[in-house]
Every structure is written in structure tokens, then in C-alpha cells.
Image 1 (cartoon, rainbow, N blue to C red):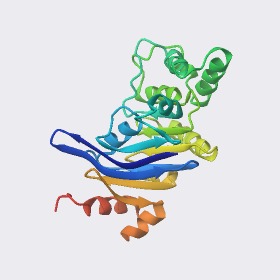
Image 2: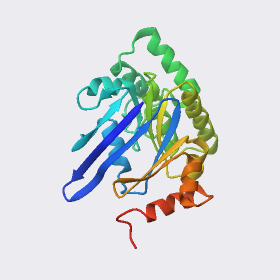
Image 3: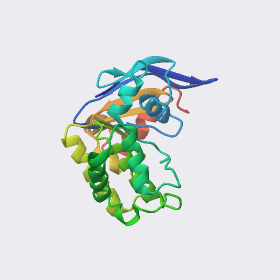
Length: 244
């Protein structure tokens, strides 16, 4: 479970996030939605321990990101918006390296590599250097890297970006399977159709603050809209700081 309590973050004159609180429970897919500049990426970076909040706390399975950063990182699998692969390493080597960083070795690591390469259909390019990979190939390898240590909590930032229709379907099935196994999934996407198809709970952030939260049906009901995209736009437009 990921618990965010009152986090704030400022960059110079810009208040990127202000008093943001929400929870992402186990066994559910929680969507974190926001327009560009809303504070979503800053929030995800604080959760994944890349940034420190100016105030507030984040806990992952009860471990505080500031007091127990190493323990939190073992509990987290993170797919960032930029895949960040090492270009000279092969797909397999990229995944292996992250497995080793998270304490896997020997036959257990090899078995996990083979499992993920098959599951995410990476075998055709598993032995090729990452330099020159398509966007879809990079996403698949970055996702395998995030999952290699079987973390209980998974943060996915735009995971289907660049994937074709068939790869997107495979990924959706994988995400639902992880949810059904009891994992906590925190999911960010700009594609409302995808959000509606996957998310059990939704948190909408605008101008650095939470402006709506609930199940997709609750979000629609709160806004008086039947379409989730229209409900999202209405919540953002009504937020303090929105353009008149």
C-alpha cells in the first residue's frame, strides 16, 4: 500500500505540489490523473524516492520514503515516463542488472529473466543492445526491469506510450493480473479510455492539489457527467487557479 500524506514541493517560485494526500491500496489499480504541469510527475517522483518533499510523508507498506529509502525501493517497481535504458546493454542485460541491484542472483534471477522476456514478448530483441530500440521495445524492457524483483507496489507512468494495439492488450492483462494477485498499482495515463478500462480508483490533481477522487463511477457522479473525460475536464476547470 502507498500512503501519501500532505506532501508539498516547491521549485523556486513554483509551488509544484501542495498538501497532496491520497492512498493507493493493495489489490487495486489507482489512477493518478492530471494535465501537464498539474504536479502529477512531481508526486510520482516523490513516491519513487527520486525527490524529497518539502513537507509531508509517503509510506510504502508502512516504510517511510525518507527514513527508510532503501527498504522502500525494494518494495517498489517503477516505470518512469522516460525509460532510461542503458543503450550499450542488451535488453536482457538491462533487466539482469536491475535484478542484481535488488538482490537477485543465480538460478532465481535467470528464471525470472526468462519469465519476463516471455511474458512481455521481448525474446526477438532480448540479445540486442538497447540503442536503436523502438519506443515500444524500450517500454517493454523498462517494464520488465521494474518488475524483475517482484515488488508488491508498482508505479507506472504512461506505461502504454508507444505500444501497438496488441502490446497494449498484453500489458493491460498483465496489470490486471498483478492487481488480482494483491499488488498495489499506481497508474498514470492521459488516455481516458485506458483509465476507464483499468482503474478501480481515480485521483485527479490540478494546480498541485487534489481536486477529485473516487471510483470512475463516483467521479462521473460527482461531476454530473456520463463520460469520464468530460468529468476529468470539469474537475480540472473547477479547480482553484484554473483559467477563467
